[in-house]
Amino acid sequence: MNKNILKIILKKDKSKIICLTAYSKNIASIIDKHCDIVLVGDSLGSVLYNFSSTKKVSLDMMIEHSKSVRMGVKKSLMVVDMPHNTYRNPKEALKNAKKIITKTKCDAVKLEGGKKIVQTIKTLIKNKIPVMGHLGLLPQSATSFKFKGKKKTERKIILRDSKILEEAGVFSIVLECVESSLAKEITKKISVPTIGIGASAYCDGQVLVTDDLIGLNKISARFVKRYLNIEKQINDSVLKFKKDVVTNKFPTKKHSY
Ligand code: KIV
Image (cartoon, rainbow, N blue to C red; front, side, top):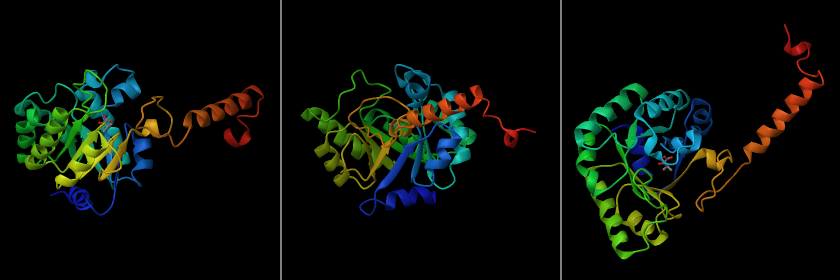
C-alpha cells in the first residue's frame, strides 16, 4: 500500500485530516506544506470555468489541471476526481482511471456514489488504483443542492453506502453536506476516515475548496468559512501598479536593463 495512503488511514481517531483543493501548481505548492491530501476536484468546472454544474467537466480538463498540480505537490497525497460520465461501467472506469494515473502521476482517484458503483470501485482497487469515496450530496448527479440525511430513508441509504464503500476497500470517504448526527454515526461505524465538507466536526477530517477559503470564489454556502479576502489584496496591488505606471514610478532603473 502507498505509504501516504496508509498514513491517512492511520490518522483515524488520532489526528484530523486536512484536505484542500488545487487546480494549478502555484496554489498546490502553497497548500501542500499544510495538507495531508491535495484534491484536484471537478469543482474546477464551476470555480474556474463558470459551468452551471460539474457535469460538463471533461477528462482532458482534469488531466491538464492535475499535471500542473503535480508539479506543486511534494508531500501530500494527491487525489484526482474522475469526472461525470467517465466511470459509467467498470471497464470504462478502469481505462479512464489508468489514463489519469499515468498522465498525472496522482496517487488516487475519487468517485461519487455508493451501491450503484461498487463493482466499478472494486475493479479499480483490484487493479491497484486507490479510491476515495464520496457520499451525501453528489454534485455530478444532484438535482437539488440541499443537505442530506434529513429523511430516515435517505439516512439509511447513506449509512448503508458508507459500509459498502468501506467493504469495497476505499481508503477514505468524503461526506458532502451530510446532517451532523449521521456524519457522526458513519464516522463511528466505519474503519476508514471520513472527510467532511458541510458534514460537521465529527468527521475525521475536513475538506474545503481553496478558492472559497481565500475569498477568490464568491459562493455563499453555509459550509464555507472565508479566511482571507484575497480579492481585496489583488485589487490593492493592481491599483498600486496602475498608479505607479501612470505616474512614471514604475519601472525605475532597478527594474530596467
Ligand atoms: O470537486 C471538489 O472540489 C470536491 C470537494 C468539494 C470534496 O469534490
